[in-house]
Length: 201
Image (cartoon, rainbow, N blue to C red):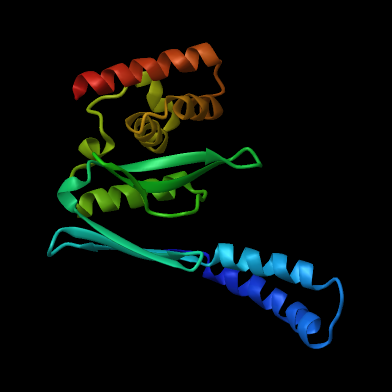
């Protein structure tokens, strides 16, 4: 479950006394910051829940985002990969989130990115096991170059996931940030990995 409801409640509570002072007591100039906090509360009003139904072999999700409800479902058989998306944080760390990758596109399991790549890799492996697919086939490649193993299994899964999504530039950036290598070397290694991934089908 992914939720920012607590942030929405916090900003709504911050804006409430300001709105009260502006509307009831006619306090001037306070309605603008109150409105800003209220908009932030609406933006944070989001929640997403996934349910993996083993009996019907269907994954269902529902959520709310800025007062809009949404839902969806897909059979386990449509899931080609449990992916790992990454993005850099302002502090130089790498943030992660899991995705369901199908032939039709990518469905994030979370609206937010977080830390803990190794912890997320354990969740990815657990979901893969629940779907009764082994981790290598879920990862999308039968073999990986030996020199790419240095970053660990979470790095491998993240890079493969990015390549499956066609995000080669992000894969190069991730490899450089983790192994502190030059651009040309990173491009060469990612190209080699992508060629092997495509040849393995």
